[in-house]
Length: 400
Image 1 (cartoon, helix red, strand yellow):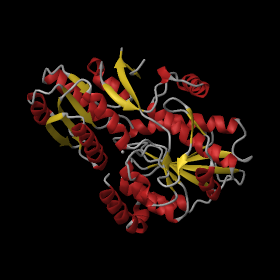
Image 2 (cartoon, rainbow, N blue to C red; image 1 turned 90 degrees about the horizontal axis):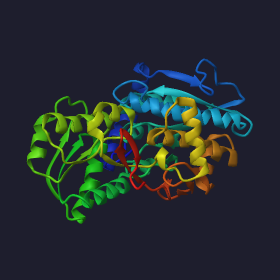
Image 3 (cartoon, rainbow, N blue to C red; image 1 turned 45 degrees about the horizontal axis):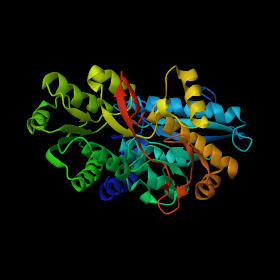
Image 4 (cartoon, one colour; image 1 turned 180 degrees about the vertical axis):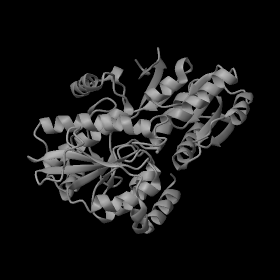
């Protein structure tokens, strides 16, 4: 979730999701790659099927190419779970999380969805990392009237599946408007490279539309595959277009590859906008990351409210470092659903009712405060993106 926040043009995603749902019955029979574990405050050995426990199902990449994000999500989820249960749980019941490793792969998401639906202890679903993977499972959850809370899914049309699909995530339209507006302040001629998937293409289209409104000349553009190991051929062309800045729309690992290739192999030292706010990106890019600018939704160094401060302190105490965008959105997802259940009931129906009626969900992102959902779009009404920049090896709020 950032400038390059992670995550389809509707026709492509929903077409893919539809095909996958049709194939779900067969896929479930052979689905063996998802590892399911159970957690109550981090204890994955304890059964959470007891009548005094209700669960949230988490579909996420524990393994595979996006495992870094799954690790960050799980830390946010576990901290939130600890706090919810320490504060009495939901409606007098303990809250648990049932984990399903999908590798953020659309086929695996579609295959595991019926299993989750059939588990009556599950009152809501959170995840997945990518919008396309999440969208493959959404129709099954929606048909079962089980809330699918795609907290990391920034694809503009993610919630179009139906009334039980929700997300508090900022849309790519909003992220990329801020991205392009920021680039326009220092660059009039740019090159853009973006990841070749549904999210990357949507994000780039949103960026391009706003860049053109701002009068930016996109001198060179190219997509690249997520598993690329050598991007020199396209980056040589990007450099030789003599841009004022190079913009990368992608994820953390590929963002570091783009940046390192530009700096180390191609001796390009101009302005760079891209990457993601993860330790993986910072570690891989090293000193090359200095000065990189991205959009995001949270900065531990720029918190504004007491609730945000308490979250940062608690996270740091538990894990030994400051949380970032992916940790806070995962944390907030569990807190949102627990808060809603305590306003209504700890049931599938109660979660849906809460998202329809609660108007003061505590907000840990951006400038804090509270938020509510737009009932037409089923997206958060008032969460705004912020800018982040790398200073001394860390992402900090740009306006500090």
